[in-house]
Length: 136
Image (tube, rainbow, N blue to C red; front, side, top):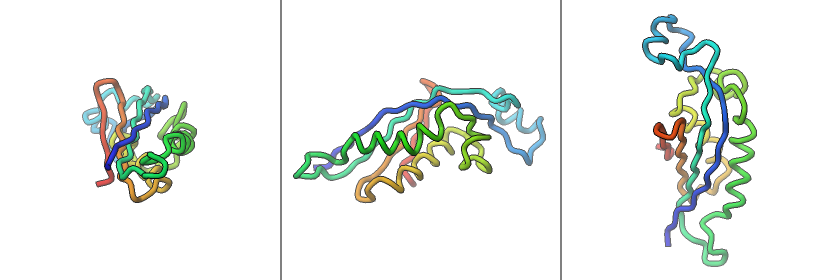
C-alpha cells in the first residue's frame, strides 16, 4: 500500500529579489517591489510530503514526529525570522525566489529522509502564490 504523509510548518523571513550583475532599472523591471533595497517579508507556509510503502510492522510510511523534527532542524531554525539574503548561506549566491527556496529546502530534507520514499515540498509565499518541488 502506497500512502502520502504530510507535515505542515511555517516560518517568517525577509528577502530581496535582485541580481547584483544587473542595473537597478533591470532589477526593478523584472522584480518590481520585491527588489526593495530594504527587503520585505513573508509568512511562509510549508507542506512537506513523503510518499512510500507503509511499513507493515509500524503502520507508518515515516514517523511524522521524525519528519517534524527534521523540518524544525533543517528549515525552521535556520530560516525563521531571518533575512534569507544575508543570514542563510545557501542564498549567498542564489536569488531567494520561492522556487529557489523550495529547491533548497527539498535538498536539505532529502539528505535526512529515507531515499526509499519520494519527497515533495510545497511552499506558500502568500495564500495565493505557491511553488511545488519534487526533486526533478
